[in-house]
Image 1 (cartoon, helix red, strand yellow):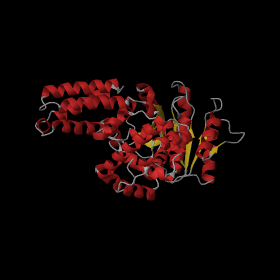
Image 2 (cartoon, helix red, strand yellow):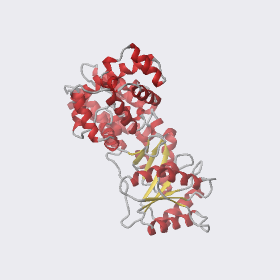
Image 3 (cartoon, helix red, strand yellow):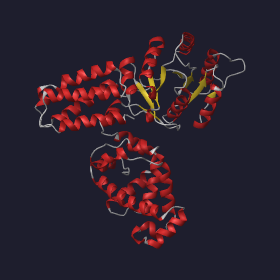
Image 4 (tube, helix red, strand yellow):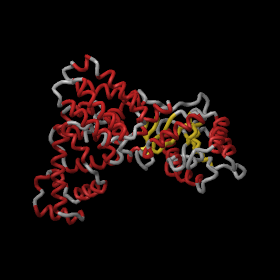
Length: 446
């Protein structure tokens, strides 16, 4: 996400760094380029206008123009203003004083409400809650069956309703009663959608709101639709009073216009972003981390949180020791690849790395998930001695390994080259700033 905008802003800052000093003239040129980059990223024009004015006001100050590194000062200002536009701080879910907490999941048809309901239920379950889901969409064929399938996939309950419960209000009432009786502290209500906003839909949602008194009304928006998503969110907020937004398909949105616009236009925060199809591909939205990614600084904190959740910490400490002692073997390389796959799509992981120094080339890396499977197969076809000491792998051994793994000698050669490069890079990282940062978490650097 944000790839296009990030690349354009980095070019602007690179040009600024090339100037001997900042002047009003070259700062205006930079602001024009930033404005164009934001508009091309499909950011709402009112948001762009406010952002540019705020940056101009701060960047034209004497303190910035006479600083030793004025370009860095400008980057700092842009970062601060982006964070402000995105919401300043993470907006967390709220819960009722007396369970069950009701949460309405609303939005247009096709935005991803049902899958987002399942993902949110899984996230709540993994964070100390006992959620129950219910679909009150009695119009779309198989809508309730779809939620039952999603619920089964995440291993959490969905309320079916009795034979007499045929209206949205009856289903919601029965689900709330069932949640209270069975000790579920959160009830997620997957509501009906439409291809466009109409009075009939809004009346029904208002009735559900009056019945359940939901603590959260979460609008699900497809980030790929850009300003259409922003306009829909604004309309829902005016008619219903949403409390937050879940932006889906953020992994496929290289522009980021919806994320940068939606809070400013609606006044309501983005609370979660969907980053893929899997059940765990839902993350809390952090404005400061999003701004960091837009400016090419990466998102190391999110990477660390993912790593802490997925990685064997004892093995991590041992890997770090091996890296420092130059004992990192092909077997260790294979095990790290397996653990890396647990973190999620590799494209998503690479996008969290800062685009600076030796890591700046990562923006051009195209990840083939099947390649990891091939690499593991090649290493599995080696003897323990070969995995421990790659230097003994001569021509005949390479041919045998290729036959055993169903690959070619060229692919075996490529793996050995990748391994040598990875070993060098990981050793460098583990001894540098990133290694120290990750080291206090006792995690491996990947």
